[in-house]
Length: 291
Image 1 (cartoon, rainbow, N blue to C red):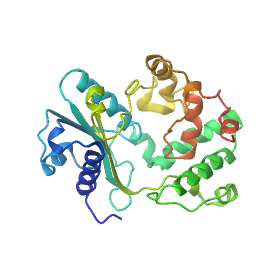
Image 2: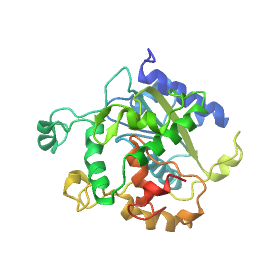
Image 3: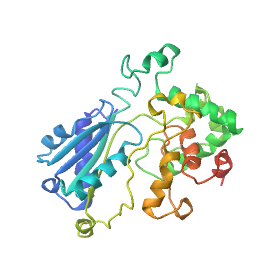
Image 4: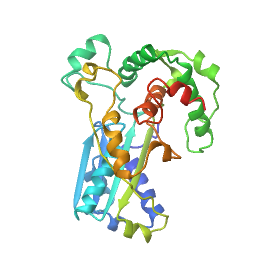
């Protein structure tokens, strides 16, 4: 519980990004954000920080939205609409609104809510169960991911959970929604983050060495994105359709990468994405993460 509003957290994050880059609030002319009606809108953030924008937008979206907003930002800059764009996400996930579905929020809610399929841990559990059934993978593979990620968190002084865990701790933690145990689930927190996108030429003159965006493919869908349970494989994701385009436009292959950051709201998601993006074959991720 931060004891603060999302607006306050977001302004702090944007201010920290500006300080890190050496830019000022007057350099920002674009601002985009994502959320689920749990954040502060870009117009409010810009007003609170004394910015006048040429473009702003708030997108309804969750895990993959930051990457999508990077794609949008590169387009705004290439088109000459903006010169410097701030992307942010902020939410009071621990003390404020919990992530979940309200009645009537989506047209398919009528098919989910009567059966208790109302929160992300339940949404992800169904495809995870199917994946385990089809591939013969066990939840010990989930544990390998949980143990490794917790080790990484132990090295980060800003992490909320820094105590190390073992595979036995994972396997003995209580069920939340099968096949997910407590240690398969991410922590909902009060938090905010921001990043800045600008031209390569402008970035070279800033305080930090630039990180070059090789390619930003935005968002892609499966044939039945809005009705996932209609896909031939219920755990199918858009990555299977995007990966050739993603790596092709960037001019690299999965084997060329030294660092991959996978969405890990639940351990299964990270596991399956290694297969989705071509780092290993279907059903091989359990063995892949052991190493």
